[in-house]
Length: 301
Ligand SMILES: Nc1ncnc2c1ncn2[C@@H]1O[C@H](COP(=O)(O)OP(=O)(O)O)[C@@H](O)[C@H]1O
Ligand SMILES: CC(=O)N[C@@H](CCC(=O)OP(=O)(O)O)C(=O)O
Image 1: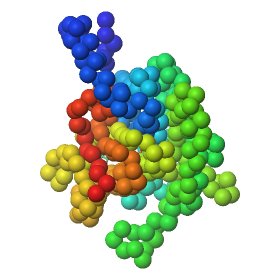
Image 2: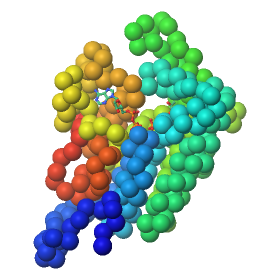
Image 3: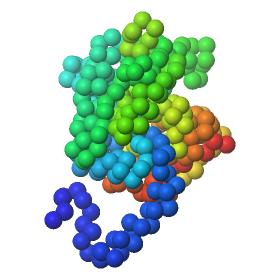
Image 4: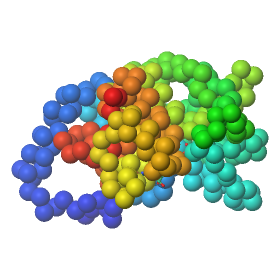
């Protein structure tokens, strides 16, 4: 019997199943030993069945010889915790304005709850996940983000303890990978005086992919990819086209830091950068192990 969320494949004959599996071989060979950074967005992780699929896919990729590194978000989960405290999140250009109390909530929700949920699911699926924040192993050094208004650069917004990445030392991630662990990273950095910073998870994923010289960066979100003004999926985007779409307001909100991170990673040598729909079961396997193109691919030029 299949579990309620699993697609029923009992009608497929064993020979056909074997054929389907064997078609993954060229991809497994191509990506064997390569690092794949997966940004798991807070909006993509709201369905428990999809979460389980996600964890199983991460384990499968690891067991066939790839090196997945998960960077998770948790925007909606932070929002839920804030509202229980009677607070409402405020965003400027896709970044959460983070006062001291909000920072405490962010650390607690991301590192204490979301990260540990993902670690538990991956471990239950047969992997060996280890949760980390940017503090662990001195991984993510940050400073206060200076945010200039996008329309009037003379104007500055105070977004509180939002971090701008100063440097990433990936040695702890590499050490874990070498020992067959799957790192699960929360987007929290530390400053000169040991203060914590809230960093957008897309920004962390993109920078980590660059520093690790990852083969791929997959950003799983709650939408088909980047859409144009008419709601049509844009399957490939260049930096120039992206500038136009941000300029005319087609790209807004949480898509701004995502697309900015995606361009940075593509320009810095990450071979393939994709924004894909995390609501599609096994979105990651489809993208990595089949020739099917999904979502939006961001090119470097
Ligand atoms: N042009 C666009 N195409 C697609 N999504 C967009 C666009 N502009 C803004 N968005 C918004 O960006 C959201 C994805 O960003 P975000 O909510 O931060 O997701 P995540 O939690 O996965 O990081 C979409 O759900 C959509 O509301
Ligand atoms: C500075 C900033 O905005 N940090 C984000 C961190 C979590 C995140 O990025 O979550 P998603 O990937 O689900 O959007 C926040 O506080 O919501």
